[in-house]
Length: 175
Length: 175
Ligand SMILES: CC(C)(COP(=O)(O)OP(=O)(O)OC[C@H]1O[C@@H](n2cnc3c(N)ncnc32)[C@H](O)[C@@H]1OP(=O)(O)O)[C@@H](O)C(=O)NCCC(=O)NCCS
Ligand SMILES: CC(C)(COP(=O)(O)OP(=O)(O)OC[C@H]1O[C@@H](n2cnc3c(N)ncnc32)[C@H](O)[C@@H]1OP(=O)(O)O)[C@@H](O)C(=O)NCCC(=O)NCCS
Image 1: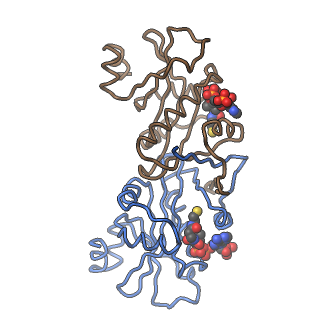
Image 2 (image 1 turned 135 degrees about the horizontal axis):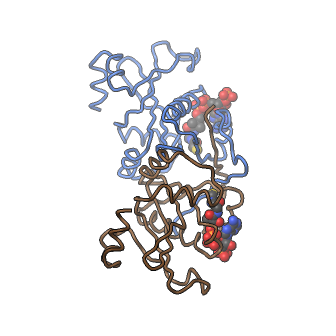
Image 3 (image 1 turned 90 degrees about the vertical axis):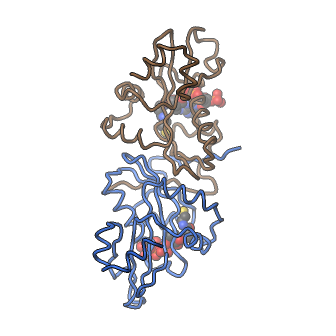
């Protein structure tokens, strides 16, 4: 919260360039349906209110996870991307994604989510583009993810390929 | 190299418990074909001779990667597992695997390799068991990997499942 206070108590553009973490997306993504006073903002800042994140994940029906572990996962992710609706001096967390990586060859994207109120407007795609831009800027050449069946086509529209050359995503659970 | 010198210049058991990184595997894995003087040793020590690792990867026909990036990837992997043949006071790198992780929920295993001279003896399985034991001890509950078509069955023998509940491994390459 301290971070947001700082951000809003100073000129936005100054704060954004100081932290280097905030970026505004082009206005056309929201289409004409969105009030012109709304802005959608992306960030790689990791100071996230874990309860706000939990609320977002609850909204899409994900099962709850211990906040202690969520905190640890965020700390040890290579990239954490958040998407915010900014209206006046209010902000609301409306999207999230993160990636693990070896910082050299590969990154794996996890926990991609857009709040139901904001789905189907191109924002999921915009969030993923933001993530891919960040990963590409770090020279990561192999970006992977594990897609639930109902979102395989969502990722396909962004250029992800399922099982390229027969490569299989595999899972192991402790027993 | 300094690490190995230390290891061999002191009593093995002392050094092993001091570093905490070395573990000997049970003798039965090599079967009866192996000379009784040989030992197979596992380690999570990251001080690896990158040229020796390159030689191992060359031996299975993997394309070369810049050593600078390999070094960075090893540094930023959550787990690095190596397998060594120890004969008298000689040691040889015969297996390698590493995993990225968020240190909380998931880990993804990359670059699993056993030297061709040592394949088909159960050592790949032993190396993977070692990796899984280490990941489980860190409370990682979701272990994933991307398997080339010819090794899907190798991972299946270890309990990995391909596309469970229709989850698809997907890839994106920069363009
Ligand atoms: C998946 C999710 C992130 C998509 O976000 P979104 O903002 O609704 O997606 P967009 O509006 O940006 O859609 C982008 C494109 O994907 C398509 N698309 C969106 N959701 C889709 C879905 N579930 N299945 C197939 N296609 C989908 C859109 O039609 C659009 O295609 P177009 O570019 O050809 O017009 C969002 O629906 C969500 O959070 N779902 C719940 C959580 C979840 O399942 N996450 C993925 C876990 S692996
Ligand atoms: C894949 C690899 C690590 C396996 O190591 P290995 O020491 O030969 O394997 P093991 O002897 O421990 O075999 C364990 C089990 O898997 C089976 N197996 C081994 N290699 C296999 C393969 N390529 N395809 C199918 N099954 C295989 C064995 O038959 C054995 O089965 P069992 O337990 O029922 O007897 C090794 O062959 C290798 O390094 N290959 C080249 C690199 C590579 O392709 N890595 C994987 C990249 S995704």
